Image 1 (cartoon, rainbow, N blue to C red):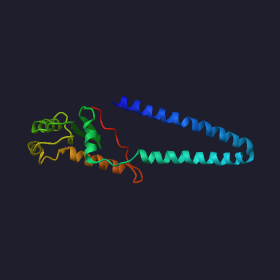
Image 2: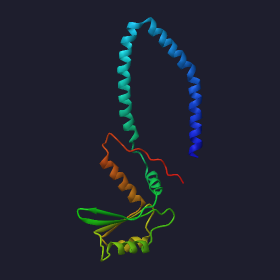
Image 3: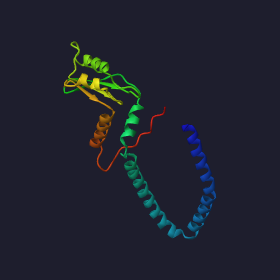
Image 4: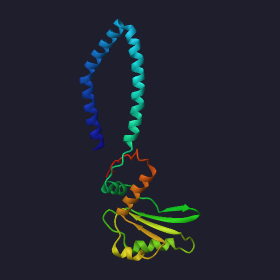
Length: 190
């Protein structure tokens, strides 16, 4: 589908270029004739034109940088993007000499069960290789029983799709100055 769009866009650009080509040729001849008849003025205007072009190029790159980073996702778009990520193994993070486990589940149609949570709790509290804390992250939801299985245990934090979106936004708000924002990602291809 993307290739078809690209061909259509290229065709439109080709047609537009074909329509503009005669005007560009005429403009070049008119400009060349004017330069030949007004050489002193052409030098002055040439210097001014070079300064203007440099200023426009600099302005273009400054504005492009600001435009490329625009944050304006709604929650569904962020969650849709996260659901489109490829599955990865569990993450083991280290901070201040402490180990943290992160279990990531991309569930589109099913919820995280108490069995999933208990298995993860077993990994966190493994006597041979314990972790300080574990974060069970899903793009979906936890069943009520799964939430009960983790309830009251400070060593595990459940992060569902809604909370994941909140953390995602919070992380970018802290890392990007107020004058900038984040580039909107392409939706995942199915």
